Amino acid sequence: MNKTSDTVIDIHTFPKTSYNKTVLDSGLRIVTESLTHIKSISIGFWINVGSRDESEDTNGISHFLEHMVFKGTKDYSAKQIALQIEGFGGYINAFTGKETTCYYVKILDEQLTRAVDVLCQLVLYPLLKENDIEKEKFVVIEEIKNIEDDPEDLIHDVFDKNLFHNNSIGYPVIGNSVNIKKFTRQDLLNHMTKFYSPENMVIAAAGNIDHKKFVDLIEKSFGKKGFPKNNLKNQRITPQKNTKNCIKVEKPIQQAHICTGIKSYGIKSKYRYTLTLMNTLLGEGMSSRLFQNIREKYGFSYSIGSFLNFFEDTGSFGVYTGTDKKHIEISLELINKELEKIKKIPLSNNELNRVKAQVKGTMMLSLENMSTRMMRLATNEIYFNDYISIESLINKIESVSIDDIQKVANKILEIEDFTTVIFIPNT
Image (cartoon, rainbow, N blue to C red; front, side):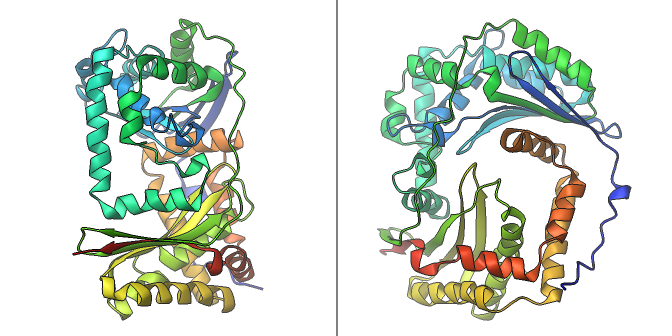
């Protein structure tokens, strides 16, 4: 029987929080986590749409729309949107992912009404003026160029495209210049009509917040907006089985970049926490096996680590490193050696305990940030339609055994089926 972690987290010493959920008649879900000992609130308006929900011709429209709503709304100009939040010490931003789009603010608690008003304006009443659309196209195209100039960033887009071949989950979130140039106002309106509906949204808030007051503010704003009946159906297609793929691209760069990996399990998988521990062991931080071997022992790389992505019904695991072009083959050999090792040789109790302590510690430190708490609330609601407590997370992490990690490693790490992308310097 495996020994549990020596690092004990006393959950009874955590600050007391209050979780609440309300579902409006429109289907809009509102979730909050109240912590009365602080002065801030983080609020996120989440729409269950991302690049995965796009076609080849519309790829990039979710991200472009995210840009456009900040250009002006019914009541606020672009500058006023920023001033309404930043002028009182707050922060406002947005992001688009493979499966979600989020508009969020972090504010002092006394600015709650103002923040809700601004966020509602963004998702309900953007102007989407033609001249603003044309100007913003140049901005997004410059953002695309910025990614293309950063091989460490770009290689992950190329990796996803080839890993999830012929599936929209492999599309880059930002899209491409050809699509951006042809988007019209009507395209944006059609996208909003299809996806920006109450039943496809979650509004989450964490901090010093009164749930009833928050719900009243949201209901008042959304009640002014008439929404057509939207029988939105999830049309996401699960990617097919892995097939081996190796892509080598010559680029005018100084350093070689390698990204290698495979499809994995989705966020609802029973293997989620085991995978998290496996990934931490292999490539999270300076204590990880990959870092200690490839960087510390051999000195072949400055940047080396593994990554794990969870989506609704699938996921990915991979390893990234940057190295000199003469060390490409040996670096891949060393990476594969570490992956084979975790499959064949059980880790020790001490190593299991250390990795569990690392995961739990990282998780607990992140909860001091209200934005992280807000994102946890929303993500759990979108994918699980439920609240997952910290106590539950810790118990799930503690329940993972040495055998669990070895079994999952043997299920996932089929190196003969890995997709590998290599950027090779041609200078």
